[in-house]
Structures are given as C-alpha cells and as structure tokens.
Picture 1 (spheres, one colour):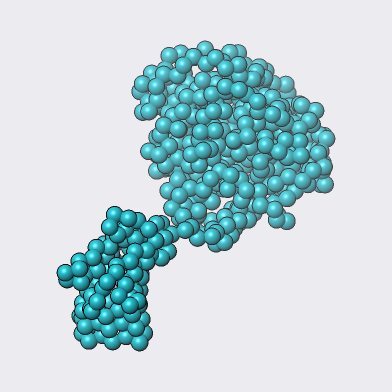
Picture 2 (cartoon, one colour; picture 1 turned 30 degrees about the vertical axis):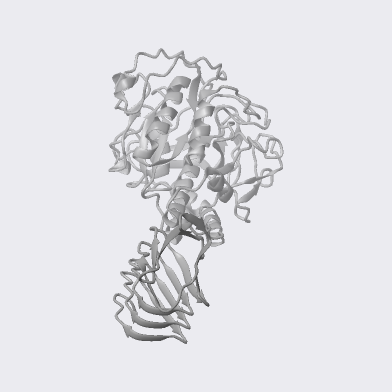
Length: 546
C-alpha cells in the first residue's frame, strides 16, 4: 500500500519528523453510490518519504492581497469579465484532506462529499477537513464569499483521500478515481484536482498495470482533466529534472509553481531558499521536467503557487495561506473550468484535455518564462523556458480555434420520392434533418436530386438522384419535409399544385422557369425565404411564408 502526502511547501523552523504508518479500518463501501468494494491492491506503488510542513491558519481574514496578486499575474478577473465565464454548470472533484463544507466560501457549492479515510469516525458521507490543506485548495478553485477562487461559479465535491495528518493510501485514491468515473455524469464533473503525491523524482511513467494510471487514462478519454501538483522537492533532488508520482503520468495535467508577487525572502523546510522573490519567478522548491528531457511526461504548465490565500478551517470565516505546487494545481484547475465553460457554451460539449493543454500552453510574451534570468535562490536553475498560464491567452486560444474551425459536413438526410402516375403527383417525404432537394424537368423526364448531403430514395434504391420517365403535362408536388432547415428548388416545371409542408426551420424555396397554378406552401415557424425567377404563379395560398 502506498502512502501519499500533500504537496505543500511552507516556511519551516526546523527539521521535519516522519509520521508513523496509518492503520486503516473497515469502510462501508456499499454506502457510497456507484462504489463497490475495491480489490486488495497488488501493484507495487512507488515508496514515499516525509511530508512537508504545514501552512498558516488564521481565525479571521487578514489584511492580505495574494488573491489580487495572482489575478493580476495571470489576468483571471479580466478573463472572467471578457468571456463571461466563472465555471457555472461545471463541477470539480478535489481529492485531498477534505473540505470545511460549512465555510462561507462554499455555501451552496458542495454537490456531495465522500470520505475514503478512517477520519470522522469512518463516516463515508463526512469529508470534513481536520488538516486545512483541502479547504485551501478547494477555495482556490471555487471559493465565493470572503475569498474568490479562480472559477467561483463551479461546484465542488470533496473526496477525502488524505487523513487529517496529511497522509493517505493508494487504495483510497484508486477508489476515489473510480467513484468519479462512475458518477461524473450524474454530478457534471469535468475536472479533478489532486494536490498530492509521493516523494519521488521521475522522468518516465512506465508503470505497467498501475490501476491509478489506468483510471486517469480513462478519465482523460472521457474529457475529464486530472490536474496534479508536480512536487516540492527540487532542492532535495539536487535540482535534477523530474516530477513526483502521480504527476509524472502523462495523462495528467501536471503543474509547477511560480511566485505571484514579491513576498519577501523565503526559506523552506526541505532546504530550498529564495533570498528574494518576484512575480513570475520560479519557486526553488517546485519540481520541473522540461519537454526537451521528456516530451510526453513533461511538466505541462506553471501557475502561481506561492503564496496563495483562501478559506481556512478554524471557523466558517477563517483564512489560510499556503505555498506549494499544491496551490499551483488548483489555479490551473480553475483555468480549465473557465475554458471548459466557454467551449461548452459554444459547442455544447466539453473540449478534449489535449485541447485544454494546448490552449493553456499557447506561446505569447506573457506565457513563456525563463528559469534562471531573475531568480535568486539556492537551486541550480535549468536555464530553459517553460509554458506558464495566462487566463486571457488560454481562452483566446480556444476562441480562435472555434472561430477558425471548418464547419462539419452536413448531417446526411434522406428524402423518399413517391410517384403516382395516375394523379401525376411527386410526393417528397423527408426525415427530421435539413433537406436540400431539387426537382426539374427536361423533355418528358423529371429528375429529383439531393444537395448538401441529402440522399434520394426512389423505388427502394438510395442514391444522390432519381429520375421519373415519360411524364407529360402538369404535375403536382406535395409531401412532408418538415423538421429541419429545408431548401426546395424547382426548375422548368409545369405544376398544377405545389403544397409541400416545410414546417419549422429556416426554409428556402426557389422557382426558376416554372408555371404554377396553385402555390400553397406551409413554412411553419422560422425565417423563410421565397424566390421566383421567370416564373408564373396563378394563385398563391401559402401560409406562414413570405
């Protein structure tokens, strides 16, 4: 069984003590909707080491400006205003230490909660946070109250996989990911945040049979973004490239941390130090993996992660501040929610995670930062450029792709043609899609042809057109094409009665060189057009038509 620690780095005054193993009790798995008892884990997960130190918790709001600094650096407020997005209609699942669900920042936001630990008396339906880490992370994403998160309109589901001492089990995380796979449609979950991981520094993800990796792959295939903190041990691993598990899994969106402002000298428990800080500088603790080392398992994006202020657990008005890739991940997760909302509003579906990462990594002067130009720290900077997020640039990239997208081919529709030789009637019966059809006559042959993807079925044969031979005198054109935006073109016809039902939609009828005794079109609702060129209409009894 693997043990996880939250991925937060904070100021330290001394060495960190290791925590004893946590004994897990029996959990009533059948009490959780959509969750069955997990099999005993057999995969040899990576080992873990000591956790990082804890953050600062305050019983009331302090005079701080970290939220505003983060917004300024990556233009969150500007993006929300410019594109009219706040995450409304979407839900994020946060796998962490739980959530203070009664905090004013989360009023009306908690869709449900599930506890995968022995905390809270093992109550599966109580994901209360006794550590504070998950409450801070959740607040960064969706907070709306005293503090404002990145996507304040989104809902949140706390899945408590880390105990109140900050540790957790691989089986709990595995079960939580399975819970999301089972319940994502029910709750509208479009993103997951995991600010956790093992203390490791990996460059590849060759984990054959890893059940956590398999579930993350399945979630990505379902267009659910799984956002994971890169790890806080860059100094401890001698400034070598790499990331922690599970951030190293290529199907995750892995996130490293920047400073959002000049917050003064910083010294961390793991040994990393930054005698001076500044907006956009790389934090000395953040692990990083450049695409030139590992193009598939790279660190996908850097966002502000030090120092961020959000909800705290001391009371329902409390505040906390943290530093770490644990805070950078929820910033990226919030940006994903904003972009998902924009895309879904225009397309009706979620974008792929590939699209989200491409838009987030859009190359502009604001989104490319060099590691080693202005950093003052005690790590070996990589002297490489990395992709860093900007909210306006990300959604603009999505908008550009949507605006320039080639329209999809029209949905094929089918029109069935029936010819009654006795009454000389052509009956046209269409499906519910838009129909494009022309009826013309040359000599004694009537030809019915489909356009814009419309197929013609005549005498049980489906093709792009059909012909009716030996037609003399006037014909009648009737039938039912209603249900779509229909186009009917008639050329060189002698018509006794033309009364096809067009129905709802923006319909278009064109007559060229036609003589019609009685025209009786029924356009239904919609914006309809009618054009008659070199044609004669004796009686026009059309309704719902111009």
